[in-house]
Image (cartoon, rainbow, N blue to C red; front, top):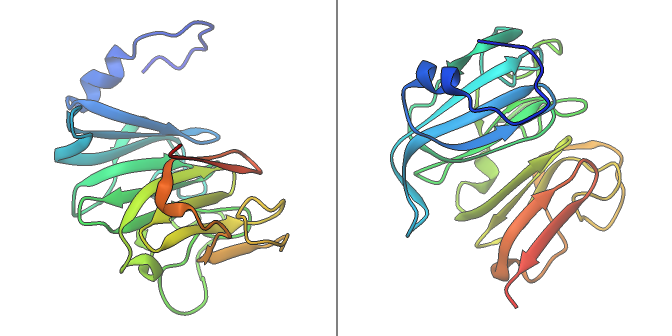
Length: 212
């Protein structure tokens, strides 16, 4: 793959030839890229087949879902079910499966964005959490929107809007600046979550758009 810099958009023909599947969504972090493949029906905006995830770029923090620290070739992520949505932060990724499971991999500022299991987080800090894990705290909720950037993520559900990760500047909307990494999803102080039609995260802020 040609790794030279470009000042204008170019078609990534070589990348498409490597994967040989239809790319339907792309997300990027600080130095890594995530691709989602599958069949996409515009009229219902839903992936009906495939749903594979590929990652390439920097992988020091586990954001490639691999032990590799770098790869210029897209690596297939080890999901055992189709994925329908992907978003990325600087060094982490969040994905939603067709069955409604929420997955995270990579790290935030001082640890994983969300620790879905029990017990303390124990992993080599130079590698991060390289295998996607399920965020079990939201297992009973129907997820409608994902957003991710910087060191935090937002997840909108039928039960409420949740944030996880760094809350350095109030980006999680919890009502206070905790200046720490919240590894469990916490409720965002936002009552109109059922009318959210778009959700976005910046490096240190978050935004939502609701129905008029």
